[in-house]
Image (cartoon, rainbow, N blue to C red; front, side):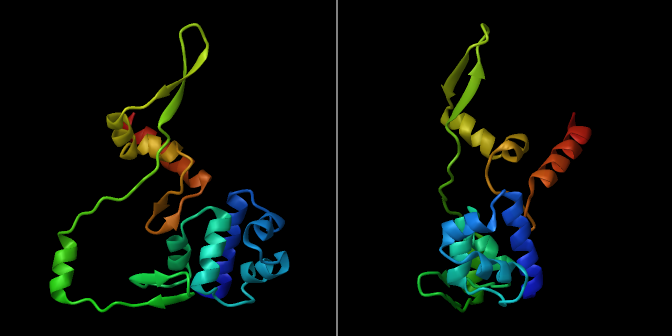
Length: 171
């Protein structure tokens, strides 16, 4: 992806999140004119440290922006603003294929519910219910979290289309 394509995608993400350049300026510390130059492809592809700052300002994954900008490293050193590449051998590749690990995922642990008398209440969800929701497509598509398909961020409009297609197929 070149700087113009990256900038256009960055602008699309910003607008999708209803963030103005002035808002992003306040969130990142970079001037709105500089941010505009990035969005219009006049500054080249940003360095990893700037991508991290932009990701935080846009409330999206820094790794997503790294991939979008064409960085494909096995390790990114955001603090020092550069990329470290690790050599991988076949033995290690086989171990990686069979490796599992735990990752931390934050999900809403409560849910608003209407009682029979019409009052609203908040119910705490059990661990089993949280696990189910993590892998329930309907719940995932309705959560206020960043979702991706083939490394591309899903917009609200794309989520609606996916929900409609699933309803046609499965309901």
